[in-house]
Image 1 (cartoon, protein in one colour):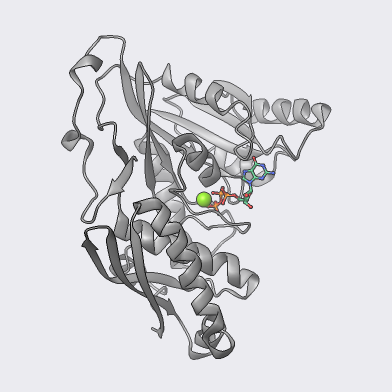
Image 2 (cartoon, helix red, strand yellow):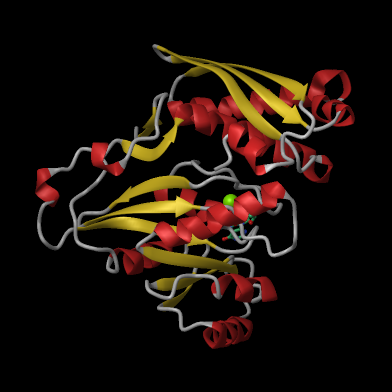
Length: 317
Ligand SMILES: Nc1nc2c(ncn2[C@@H]2O[C@H](COP(=O)(O)OP(=O)(O)OP(=O)(O)O)[C@@H](O)[C@H]2O)c(=O)[nH]1
Ligand SMILES: [Mg+2]
């Protein structure tokens, strides 16, 4: 099974094993940024491409808070896909600013950019984001959720509107959920990458550590099980991550901003936190292919998300 980096990660591409058979001048390798406004399906697309649940997804905006890289290897190319936080054009506090900066940085660091939009329609937020993207590299438009948005005339109008905003290199209707035309999109990205040998070995899936991904899986269950009750100012810290043969021993803390939020996360008689821990454990066991012993606590830390300095201390770059 392809794997996450067991504990310490992240590793730089240079540390990966280049396969001598990829040294041909036609082989390509590089970064592909997956960007766009919140909730359009960027993380679902990354997971579909790498064939594993690497990035967390939920039906609410700003689920993703960090850059996450997923490796996809073809016979003649290796693509390093970068998932990013949804770009929020509403004004907001320090956390919002940090997430937006990460989203723009991911696009700035990539060789090829894929802006994802929702096939139900192009919005003013899509326009604002498209105008921020770098002018000096290929930008493809992936029109997602075409399994649900089936109206062809509307799709044509969307393409026309997008074309007026920016001359995208390609316009590709896809469904990240069903996989429709995802291989086509990947191929169009691959041919635009610079020549170069593979940066990662066959068994490597991501530059993120198991420890990091464990925290993300817990955050996903918070998003999914709390819905609109979830305080925006909550995050997950992994306090202990022990790797043993066929076993991971993990201790995690859900941080909230106020006492009243603690009860919401715990639920009646601790039911909710138990369910969060149990669902996260099942996903983590699948990802690391080992048994997982997971404990999750809730703690109040007022003001943790108020300043960029404090956010950095909690892992937000
Ligand atoms: N019908 C349909 N739904 C999709 C598709 N792709 C994603 N979704 C749903 O759209 C919602 C948002 O998906 P995410 O992948 O979390 O979106 P995102 O762009 O990463 O969101 P943020 O990280 O919050 O910016 C989830 O409920 C997904 O299941 C698709 O191809 N078709
Ligand atoms: Mg996401």
